[in-house]
Image 1 (cartoon, one colour):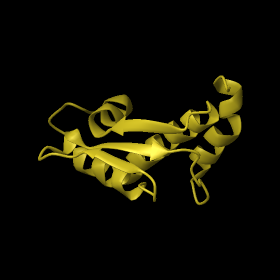
Image 2 (cartoon, rainbow, N blue to C red):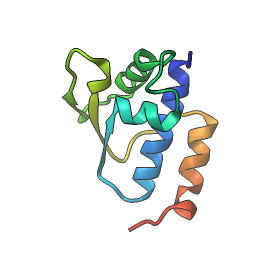
Image 3 (cartoon, rainbow, N blue to C red):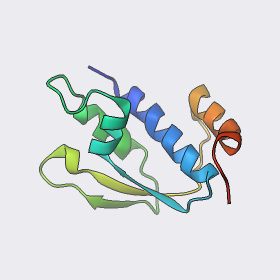
Length: 105
């Protein structure tokens, strides 16, 4: 089973890439994030940990767009740019080098 921290790192990296690309927001669904990071769908998925990571990253101005009974329906529109202070080294690396890896406006 994967940890909430695994999903938090993946989500923050995705947010940093979108911000470096010049996006004003990014729409993230729990099912898509989990598929991207592996293990979903499957009998040993970590959807609860994925949703917990997404909810922990919600800041004022973000929008919860969908959350029905099934946790895989969780969808959040995260506003950019984000305050990435306190992010792990993985996110700092992505933040520093994303302009070289992705086109910017």
